Length: 254
Ligand code: SF4
Image 1: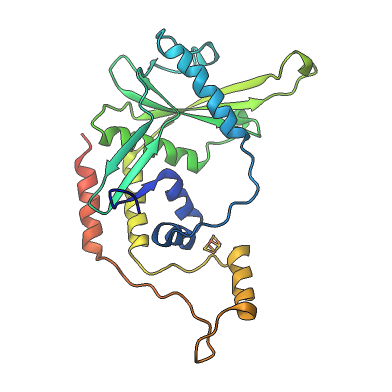
Image 2 (image 1 turned 120 degrees about the vertical axis):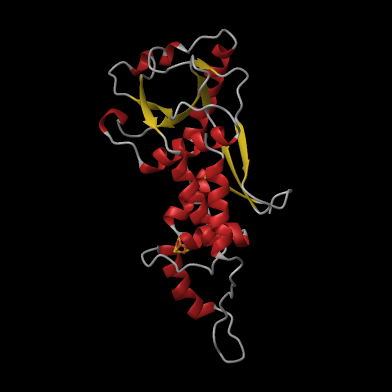
């Protein structure tokens, strides 16, 4: 629970819902997250370096040479990284941009950096990246700023070279993605429905819950009837409340 008492959803949270509604439910309703394995922080390092690089061009009003001719507009100055959308007294949606451009019409264009381990010039945009642009446009529009209706993904991909001793070459690949904030409205509404319903079933092919199902028989606590205790959950809200949420969100688009 946050300081203001709201549950703050995010693009990452909605992606977790896509992967497994039960894990999503446990994370937001019970504060139980799946343990993190060993993950690389290399992409975070790339993000910091790229953000600092873009920052150094912000005050001179130019696009960094690395992306010059590939992006439209000017860097937003000052840059607003975080956006909050209060949906109602119980829920909110927050987002954090990597970068933002403003075009000649005064419209805002979100930018996201992607460190890629495969050649981005040869692959389709992932649905998660599409949803991310949708949600960025959603949060900007809900903060009463004009949106261009699209965003950019800036991919960074380490390239092959026989001359690595002269520096590591990087492919900079930019894709323009048209976004639809109404998709985010639908995803938020679905997420609230899941959170306010009983705990969903586990994914049948998930190794973690399968492991738990097996091990609880061996080590689980048993009650007086010699049965293993399972968590009990209850319905928290009606579907009419969720309909109201959709209507409220849709009202704010011009
Ligand atoms: S099925 Fe897997 S992903 Fe879903 S709740 Fe269980 S551990 Fe989490």
